[in-house]
Amino acid sequence: MLKAVILIGGPQKGTRFRPLSFEVPKPLFPVAGVPMVQHHIEACAKVPGMKEILLMGFYQPHEALSRFLVSAQHEFKIPIRYLQEYAALGTGGGIYHFRDQILSGGPEAFFVLNADVCSEFPLQEMLDFRQQHGDMHSFVILGTTANRTQALNYGCIVANADTHEVLHYVEKPSTFVSEIINCGIYLFTPTIFQHIGNVFQRNQQELVLCPYLGEESSNGWHRAEAIRLEQDVFTALAGSGKLYVYKTDGFWSQIKSAGSAIYASRLYLNQYSQCHPERLAQNKPGGPIIRGNVYIHPTASIDSSAVLGPNVSIGKGVTVGAGVRVRESIVLHGASLHDHTCVLNTIVGWDSTIGRWARVEGTPSDPNPNDPYAKIDSETLFRDGQLTPSITILGCSVTIPAEVVILNSIVLPHKELSRSYKNQIIL
Image (tube, rainbow, N blue to C red):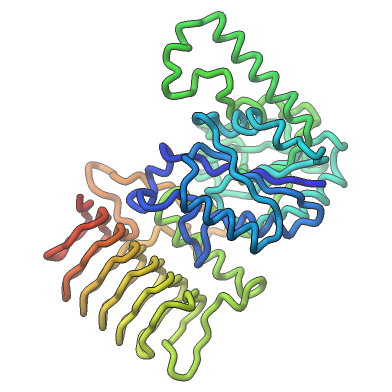
């Protein structure tokens, strides 16, 4: 029997996802037409022997989250529960805190997945790999290849080429260590809790020795329970014969910023042709012109002269007028694009309106297409005092007037613009 734990974090994170994370917890943000975390749940539910899926984070139990869990349980016919941490406990602290819930029913192994990655989720392959390598108590990290410069932004894994045992693990090293990076998807057995327990005990001893550290516990990082799987556990396990890496050649990307959501949407839409062809819009007589992979919610109303795609996701109740062009964009529910608007590399927020003949455009933050191992760069918002050109984001209920141009800008919710803007954050 198996279980899965999906780490969804909480409100203090996701700051790079603003202003979109103001309206909805980041894990529920729609990517390729469904909430980000639904891709994880679907992958877990497909694994034979999966008995329960636990979502873990420190969001207040919130109406949108509860509604989502009820509908996901109904759709995937598997128990799905949300476990709320009392504070940010880190990737290891959360699962250690809820170890009794994870271990109830006696699972022989469990997956841990970070919610802010998009992937093909080769979970069955990881299980098969563990059968072939290591013993019943070994753990598997999903790894992928990055290029040398970008590898420094991730956890780097040095592994034995023949046995795939992890010999050395460094989180975000300052110099080049390895091109194999950690994908944030793990397969553990219950014995992992002994290793996390050792870290917990060590942290407690340090707090006894240095009690003044406890006074800073407002940010949570000086609590003994705050444990990071990557730095605290994997670094210690590397080289002990217990930790293995399964390398995937399938797609994988982090979803840290809103720009990476458009890229993730492209990866998932691409995958739909194999696993969910029904989610992809087709060219039909009297329907809009579809180019490449496009998801359209059945309730959206789209003029037959609109041209959509590639990589476009249209949410529920969206209206798209005559002659509209949308490419590489996510249009969220209730938005309205009036006649002849042009929307490129943009996320259009809930219930926003774009006037006739307006142009809303961003700069894609895609990985280098000529490098097969390139990952998306986690761009800083500003560079040299200037806003880094990136995708344009309209928060919810933003109104763009007719015939203006909005370029590389972020517009906070409930704004009514009166003119064109370029490279600005409009507060």
